[in-house]
Amino acid sequence: MSRAAAGELSPLWVGAAVAALLISLLAGLAIGPIPIPFAGIVEDGLAHLSLAQPGALSPLDAAIVWELRAPRVVLGALVGGMLALAGGAYQAVFRNPLADPYLLGAAAGAGLGATIALAYGAGGGALLPLAAFVGGAAAAAAAYLLGATAGAGQRTATLLLAGVAVASFLTAVQTFVLQQNSETVREVYSWILGQLDTADSGDVVMVAPYILVSAVVILAHRRVLDVLRVGDEEARSLGVDVGRVRLLVLAAATVGTAAAISVTGLIGFVGIIVPHTVRLIAGASYRVVLPLSLLFGASFLVLADVVARVALAPAELPIGVVTAVVGAPFFAVVLRTSRLLRT
Amino acid sequence: MIELERVTVRLGGRDVVEDVSLRVEAGSWLTLIGPNGAGKTSLLGAISGLLHAEGRIVVDRRERSDMSNRDLARLMAIVPQDPLIPPDMTVAEFALLGRTPYLGYFGRLGSADRRAAEQAVERLGLADLAGRPLGTLSGGERQRAVLARALAQQAPVLLLDEPTAALDIGRQQEVLELLAGLHAERGLTVLAAMHDLTLACQYADRLALIDGGRLVAWGKPAEVLSEAAIARHYRATVRVTELGDDGPVVVPVRRSRAVAEASP
Image (cartoon, rainbow over all chains, first blue to last red; front, side):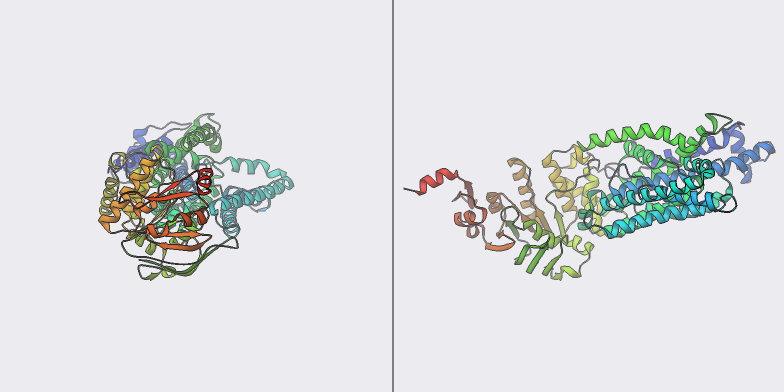
């Protein structure tokens, strides 16, 4: 049997995804209100590694590339890859093509955390990332505990309902806090739409370890997640400890997601668009979907950020608006194809 | 190979399996028969560990309760009545899932696993369909894919719940002939639940008739299947005749005619 038939990831796809990521990163560094030539960036980058002579870029251009754009591009890649990977993981665990990393209430929890930090926190929201991270992770944990202790049998359906309950509750609290502190509405709103333009290297250093660990845990489960595609009962009869897999993968995906959105705000649709595109073009096995979602998710968000930067230049579009403008029509396509697959 | 001692399964406050004791010898084929709701599927569920059961279940001289999911999966491959078929999974991927019990938690599929799955796919005549998504297969092909997964599992025991439900008569025969071939060539122990009594007779060494959760008859097909037993437990009017070497053949007859014949 061929490797593709067996659901294995072909090196060709990995090569294509890595190439796409490199091109996106380069585009992210080069394109903006002040265009900077690709060749100059490459040469200057090599000079940093002592592989070429310095001086390809003027000091101003070098500062724009490495100090302003690089943290933003790297953060975009980390967050995009994480959200896409977490989306794929959530779809695997819930066996639901429409699952995304916010399904257990991570977004609502992070939103409430951010709102509280902006409304009551000292120092103009310096605590925002921490509050958003704790809020997102705690909301998903609460939904998991609620779902795991209520109702037997239909475990994933119960979890889903618990997620809905937790998210609506937290959103209601957030609305109340906002209504009491209407002067923060603008800031909260801009956080909800997501932004990469305020990124600095501190953000990258802060979230990278969480995203790295989370990605390793999820990718290590890619084969086991394929077994879950035949349902809990049959996965169990094939020797899989379904409860443990579900807990580990959801925990990793949630921590990674909470870390990502704690610095960028709520960027939607990446977790749905990217894994589904990969599934449609490269194969449905999670040994294919998860690694490629990580790579293409990173490219996608970096490119979306380029669009956000140039579409209304010199003004910037919130990146969440860009991903949603692409995401909403795509969502409709996914709905249609997933219905066709079932019939 | 499988021993059940006073097994009881309680579901929703009702005993759906009650005090069943039964032995399946290594290398033999036992088919459970009984009317709808008799408890056949629940009994299989108790053995596979899907349902909680009281009493003793021993598989290959080991207590079921002492075994992990993985231990059991290496001993017993299960073909459920209504398997969940991911439509976008290929036949080859599906067969490879049968290797799961041999891989560590983070283990990867090796060449031995690929070979085992490939052989299973070929044995069931699916080599040309290996790259096809399951959603595009016919019912008979799909059932063969499920058997390929079970075969790739290389377990000495095969547990089948209605392996031929929803198949036409030709596909039923095809699947059962394949199973009989595997049973003979690999010495597999088969425990199946079936509805078609004639087919059950043709392919099993022993039948166990279950009604109301209890084991009511057990033995060679000809001993278990009498017109009286079928009338009592299935409330069906049938003739049981012999047809060559194939053993008993169960034929339903119109009730009105049967009554007319009986009264002089």
